[in-house]
Image (tube, rainbow, N blue to C red; front, side):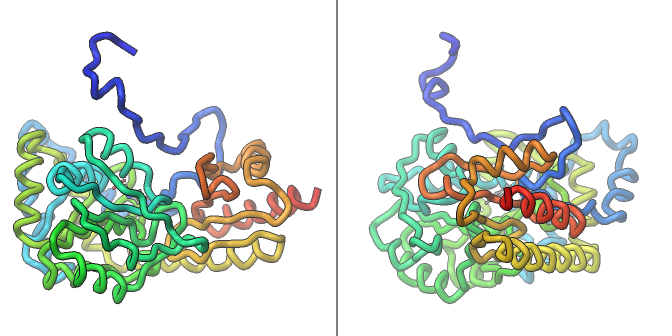
Length: 353
Ligand SMILES: *Cc1c(COP(=O)(O)O)cnc(C)c1O
């Protein structure tokens, strides 16, 4: 710790990303990346954009990408905000909407960046316990609050809420912003984007990192009422006007256009998830029902912490969270069919010994 750090930095509790080791080749099932490469047309578009124009700043309004996203989701360009990954949009949203007198509400088991942002911006939070089966119960989000955020499907648990329950929350909670983080929505859930037309306090955030195989490009977007989008713009333009570079803008635009490739890879991930869940249950695992590109699992007789190490020694990385409520589980990202076959085979051997 340096004496030059500000008081708030001394007290930060930063988010810890999953490991990206380089010591050997692993089957990476630990950070919820897509196992399939980006669409070839995305790579071509990025290559094409690597030209002399890089000497110029990119469009600070990202207009072409916003227009394309608006058309794709049936809203107006003024309802769309884009950012350098959805993490950046989440940070801007916490600052823009959640610095209020009342604490904000979010699930106790969820994406740990929400805690990090509360810390960074000195926002008070109340963590509402998810149910025993890890379902989020929105009927418990009733107290006065400075905002509500949850991931749908939820991070870690992969549980997905039906839109009817989100509508119920929005009808009760009209006095503060409600942010739905849909990083995993394309793997089987229904997006709340259409609800943004009716509910002026709803912001839906999505990312190209997971379902569009572009974690390395850093592009996310948000959809909501124009007032919400304008608030995000104000914050962004007080911090960094050029959050998306020219290569990212070119690649993202193409990723949204290549619907066929997107649908195909999502279908494959979903099919492999169902296969993996079935095979794991045959060898003694319980699997929390998932609508995401990962599953939360535990074995009846082998502690997850041990399995995490043993499978790592076999060259396969999964995620173990030494945190209340989930420390009995492993979170496993869905890889390719072949990767998951290897994973199930190696686990099968480990749990028999
Ligand atoms: C992966 C993830 C994000 C971050 O996505 P980026 O766009 O890569 O920043 C946001 N929220 C949740 C719940 C995630 O799992």
